[in-house]
Length: 117
Image (tube, rainbow, N blue to C red; front, side):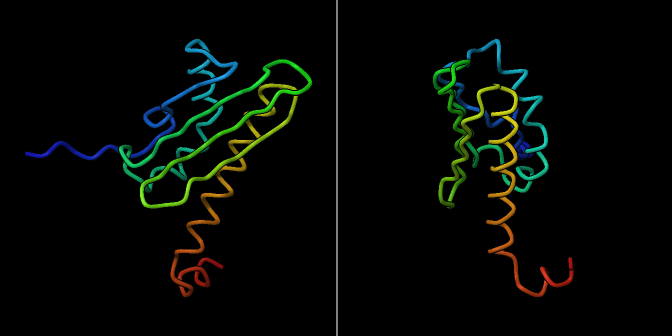
């Protein structure tokens, strides 16, 4: 019997925290990014890789970058220059949700989009 396929979630797909983030930050990031789970669940966990980097954390030049690599799709990148970490993370999360929604809407048959109205 085959094992059931795992659905993509932030918890299962967040492969790398880099820059100013360490292992102690992981649970906070997963919680803050939980809104992404709804958009990721249409993919298999093994098809998605999320990478988050924060450069120059807690400085005026802080920059957060969230990359989503999804099998057979162009890489998506969301960035923020908010100086407050949680605001920066919320901005990259929301931008990635928007990009995933836009990508889905482009591939969805036109008549289905009209029905959703």
